[in-house]
Figure 1 (cartoon, rainbow, N blue to C red):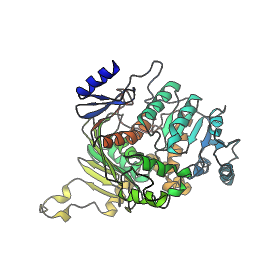
Figure 2 (cartoon, one colour):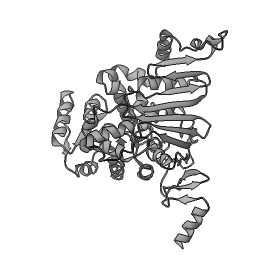
Figure 3 (cartoon, rainbow, N blue to C red):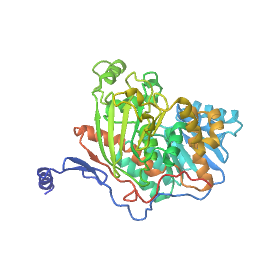
Figure 4 (cartoon, rainbow, N blue to C red):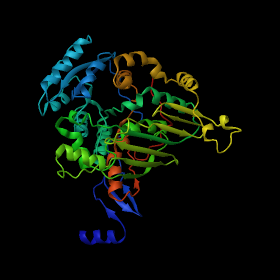
Length: 461
């Protein structure tokens, strides 16, 4: 009977991936399921926990990304690192010394070994688990921590599959615990300022946005313990690291705060440079490198806006997150150098073929406008953020805001739906590519509540 039903579905042009978080092919589109909310779960939109006087933090993963977390937290009022965990004991001791160096006490608890992270998550008297581990472990550890009563901050991407995205959403809704993905690029000074400008209407109606992760990783592949990052790239098509590009532009477009991402199409090049690097690393012909040198994903929102996201970690292109905001009244871009263009008054009287007439505003005008619209959060914390550092200070602002919101019992700037939506591009882009760049109807992680909130606002007391 099952075979007959499957045959009938195929004949009808309907190919099904049967699990509840899978997809079907309908009318030449890949349609992802949005399962109903299980009984006993509640939406996390606008969720705020009770205020926490001092946020007691356990950090899991003290390698390249995690080693600086204790340093930053030592500068933040109402934050206390009380537990540290890494496979390597020497990294734990390095983190302890970094705390003491900055006048903070040593963490009370230390964990190492394969299961040390579970012991940390099970601790009494711990409020927040901060995860800086390989991508493949993010969801597993985040779910475990929430099930043990802890709020979670998890590095990017928070998940690598749609099933994992739903696991984060469902666990957060069921346990009533925050799950914030640590998308630091949302706190870059330029991105924050442009967000503030957009919210004040300087760009008019934002109709298109672009973001990317273009970063030649040649000097850093060996930094990833156990070769986990190259392994993931060689095994997967698509945009495997989308959140630095998609996060800030989703905030400008109020995704799940008045609009939603509906339809996605992805395409990639063959793996030219990628295969060469894999051959040099593993031996010629040893692996069939999957990740294209460039993956491009185009998204259309419910309200008719578009987003372009790109991924490239193997070509010689200089670092670029693109970050372009296109509005009916203005335009902004960050790379290769910051630029603003507002209105068309400067073109009045110009010949139609005088392409040089279409100019950015002068550096003096741009800098004056950026100063005038500096985001209040950046204005408040900029001096300390630049002193402490972390990608120019944006890591510190991100951590500062996380602790501020938990301490004051406020909704977080980035919620679990952001984590799921932004991370979902990992699987969705790969599935689109594997089906010949077929359009994908994206799942709705808010389950129909994407327009319940009127715009993005960072909560302040």
